[in-house]
Amino acid sequence: MDDVLRLRKLHAGYGGGAVLQGVDLRVGRAEIVAVLGRNGMGKTTLLKAVMGLLPCTGEILFLGQEIAKLPSHVRARRGLGYVPQGRGLFPSMTVADNIAAGLSIGAIRRSRGDTFKGAIEDLFPIITKRKSQIAGTMSGGEQQQVAIARALIGKPSLLVLDEPSEGIQPSIVQRISEAIRQLNEDHGQAVLIVEQNIEVIAALAQRCYVVENGRVVDEMRVDRTSVKSLQEALSV
Amino acid sequence: MTQVELIALAYQFGLAVAFLILSAAGLAVIFGMMGIVNMAHGELIMIGAYGTSIANRHGLPLVLAALCGVLASTATGVLLERTVIRRFYDRPSESLVMTWAIGLFISQAALIVFGPSLPSISSPLGSVAFGGFSLSIYGLLLIAFGLAVPVAIYLLLSTTTFGLHARATMQNVEVARAIGINSGSVYSATFALGAGLAGLAGALYAPTMSAVPNMGGSFIVQAFVTVVTGGGNLVYGTLPAAAGLGLVQTALTAVFGNLVGVLGLLAAVIVSAKLFPNGLAHRLSGKRFS
Image 1 (cartoon, rainbow over the protein chains, first blue to last red):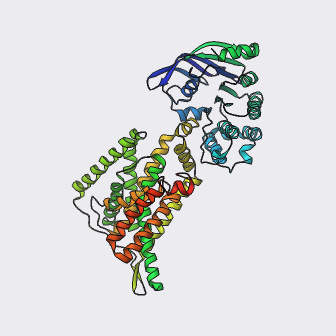
Image 2 (image 1 turned 180 degrees about the vertical axis):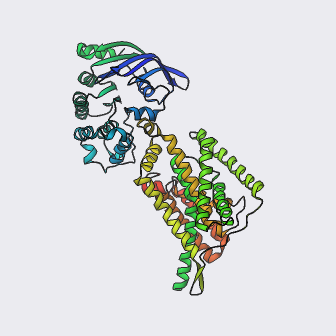
Image 3 (image 1 turned 30 degrees about the horizontal axis):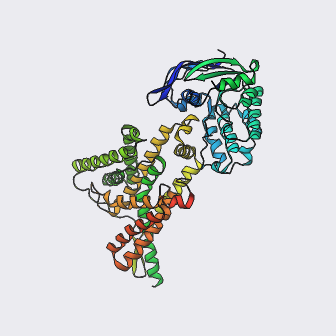
């Protein structure tokens, strides 16, 4: 079994209204996979369904096991690390407490993840340098780094990122992209990312899926695809 | 005013503040962390008092009897949360009506099972004479509990894993779930904690008042006005609110009598609600919990 995540005929939506209509998708080990598409096409819904934050039907195989019926917190404990759109930090808590909230869940994996934890601290030094700062007082870019570090600190098997570059200045986006790429290369970190920024996709992803009206309409290898084609995919 | 009179007044102030804090603690925890207005709070206090009274009548020393009272209210809280409350987490209006109905059910059940009242427990520890005044040592214990409870809850929330998860769940329940926090367990434990604190209030005041089915009514008004004034944060809300309201009530009672003291307390609540509509906690800390 080489897939970290495999979705088959996944349907999901809000309040009875279907948004995803039979999505098939896979993320291999040590692979970074992007999901592209215009706003409102179901990209965030897809990630929420994977994380168990929306009711869904269909198959969600994670590390070879069916998780579609499991509650969200159990999925996270099995190794899904999630960074929601808008960062989703606990704004009144310190950086250290935000990280601890992610770390405490990964306690089982923590014993064999000390090296990985050190790597996260090296890649995101903000979590040690600014550990006493209230998270809600940080800039968007700083918050995004803390949110990604929180998702990674428990050593997830798959990192799920929802528009990590949204509203962040280019230099910070580049730093975050570089950190994710390094984790992928050094530690084989698998990533499923929803992103609108073509530069981030081109720098990170190996494959991408194009989503339109809740369906996957195209799949391509990023290294064999021109930036223009990616831009066209975003405007499908 | 002589020094002795000042000390006596401070003692009365301490008793008033402790009563407000202990009455409100469970309500504040459940409201502050879960957003639920628990209208059965008074009945959970009654269960704590009844558990203490019954256990004491069966020969247990008061400390162990009080522990039984706290356990009884905590167990009731767990049962209520598992069977009813969890279905109304995101529906505050319905949860308010539902907990009110539960409160009525509990008080009527107590009336049917135990009759109109239980034999009273004698107040322990005696008293000390001070000048012309007599100070109850048990009253001093109540004051100590009134100060210790907010500190203990603050430490629980700020230094333990449960506290970390509770604060995370309160701030963003969806994200808390998505990073692996079992929010259902956090809510269950929080409701049990609130019920246990209500039971503690009942257990502590059992020796000082008659144990009757509607005794929760003696606490509920003070509990609500304290939480309305302070907000759902025990340290930044309940504690200063109780101090302010207790000061007003004690001063007015000392000068004009009990009726004016109670009226002054309610007037202070109205003024505070006008000045700080989001509660003192919001004003003092900018947040509902630590």
